[in-house]
Amino acid sequence: MRGPLCIFVFLVLLLPGCLGADVRIATFNIAMGFDRPGEMRSALESGQHARLRAVADVLQRVRPDIVLLNEFDFDPATDAAGLLNRNYLVLQQGRYAPIEYPYHFRAPVNTGEDSGLDLDGDGKTGGPGDAWGFGHYSGQYGMLVLSRYPIDERRSRSFRRFPWSGMPGALRPVNPDGTPFHDEASWSVLRLSSKSHWDLLIETGNGPLHLLASHPTPPVFDGPEDRNGRRNFDEIRFWREYTNPEPAAWIRDDRGVAGGIGPDARFVILGDLNADPFDGDSLPGAIDQLLSAAWIDASCTPASAGGDEAARGQGGVNAMHQGEPSQDTADFNDRFSGNLRVDYVLPSANLQSMRCGIFWPARGSGEPDPAEVSDHRLVWLDIRL
Image (cartoon, rainbow, N blue to C red; front, side, top):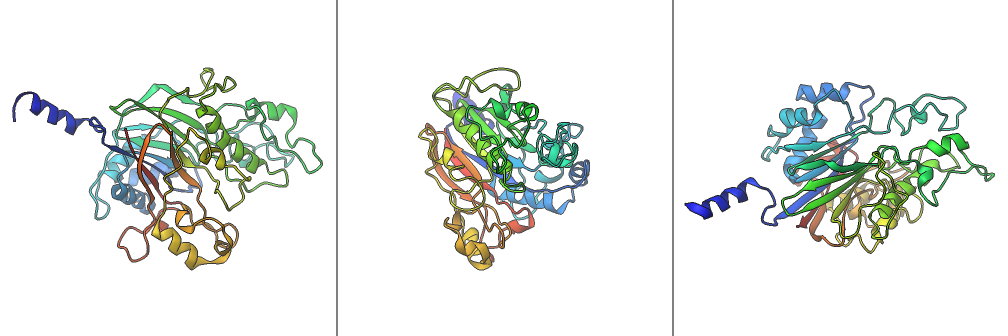
């Protein structure tokens, strides 16, 4: 093989996506649940943490090109992506070939960062309920994006500090008597994001792709004011407003730049959004804000054999659910919440969705047992650029 043809083939092998091949994008809440700062670093350094080995096994099986890992602690002193690659992903964990991600993004999150205010209304300050986002230490329940494609951090945006009160029509929590749950001083500075909202610009080789990553708060663990349910609703609403082709001048990122994503942008919204279309404790219509938007393509609904099998076998609350059990993405307590669809990968309508799925194999399939990894399942989507 000589001349231009040789160069062409070399570039095809070198540059992922340069011919418009399908790109697999995934979200995976790995629910590490560490109790103390530094435990994630120790687990990454050891190369022997059973849950992280199981996470690597799943990633080697599904092989996403871009993946958001929710509940991956943020520690600025640790090369988390490097350790995860070196000690887990490039080592064969099961039957599948190693995988490596040369690019990544991580940044501070609101969880565990003390606000100095009484945000949970218990009459005291300090503790996980008074952090900007619930957490026992700074960086708990963080986020990490791994990518085979370069990430343009200079043109990426973060909305971690955006005030909830800055959203027009925000669902401000109120007490049963109608008075505001938070005093004016607290409400004026309370951040919308329980972790963060990121707009990461991915350079695919076929034009830019905006990866819109977040992890809204669960709509539970509060009182009659439903502050977490209301916050969850508005955290989800943020992406609807941000991607709306109509201007959203009230949106302002952490650098002070105003406005939404802009018309005709190609994007994928992904993450553990903690809202099911039919069941669970989220406010009615919370996730429908995205599923019903004309500029978002929700036509590819992921499903799995394992989800259907689990819901029918576990019973409990699952028997009363309205949603299709094969579309569940999380295996929760069957007495209180049951299994739910809470993890999403939703592309813009100007992208071509090819196929999608949930890594939740049926028992006896010979695949890795997802229950050994997390109470959530990896959700993936293939798009063609």
